[in-house]
Image 1: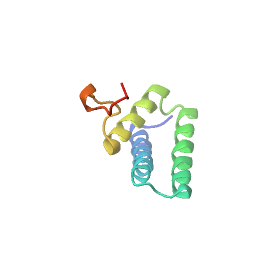
Image 2 (image 1 turned 90 degrees about the vertical axis):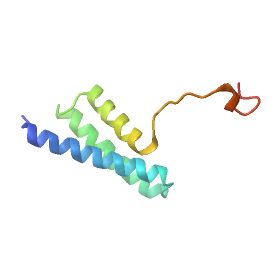
Image 3 (image 1 turned 60 degrees about the horizontal axis):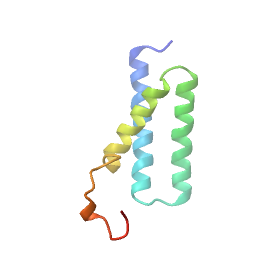
Image 4 (image 1 turned 180 degrees about the horizontal axis):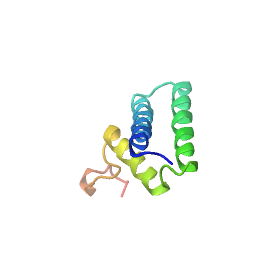
Length: 88
């Protein structure tokens, strides 16, 4: 069983991996770098789930938070007047 301190440590590491991935994506990194970052993050998340360290809803929340820190909110209000003609 994980102690709170070690659990906190793996969550911090997960957040770092996700941050690196989302920054690389936003910067338009080369495909090999993106694939490696995805692989590291995906493997780490799978391990955390299989070990029972995090639940799927908690994991999804962490991913959404980190993505939002790098790329902004997932949704935003858009006025119809702001859309290009023919989009609505």
